[in-house]
Length: 259
Image (tube, rainbow, N blue to C red; front, top):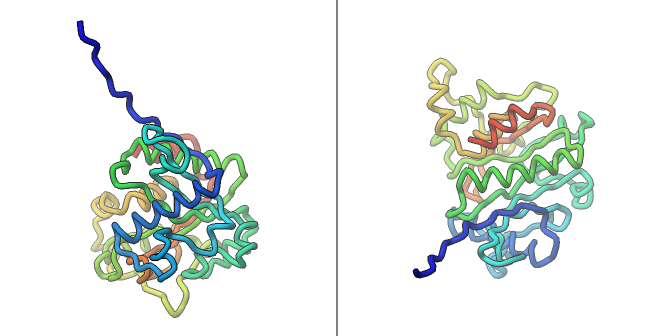
């Protein structure tokens, strides 16, 4: 009787990057997704290195996702998320989001803040199970570090806000942050999200078609800052996401991770 070979499914592991090589691998992955796949415009330095990097990277933690079937360490990284806390932002001088938004309401509220950014996963791995693993890693980090507010930019692909008039209007009418936490797009870049009357919006249909990351944030009670920001470098239209982590109960967390 011949022996039958069975393929063991890959094991997905999520943890913080531990070495310089792992952080560089995360930057290379970001370059592949943001620049090669989605058409972001690199600086000459970024294009030469084929790594997406900036001044915030050295001050941040990098959550990385590994497919162990590809090997170990840097060679197996297939996803990443950048985590910048207040101490890291102080090293740089400010949070990345403040390049797009006035985040003084968050800074002044006294909460323990964590900025999430540069989220990406290689296309073959954009599945519910892999995203679930990634978000479990984020949730564990939040609990371990007593984070009270998560924030960052969620993106629509493309730089014409009119293409997303329904979605932006929906976020404005249904999920605008309360004044005490309401960030605002910087005046020189401010894009009004109130592009359509609330009565004309099909809430269920719009929610169904939102980008998965923004939809996921909303499922755990995220609110949205005032105004959108068009990021021509990254070929996106951004909104500011704010999540008070006490809203992420076990019930909400489970619901979010399973969608």
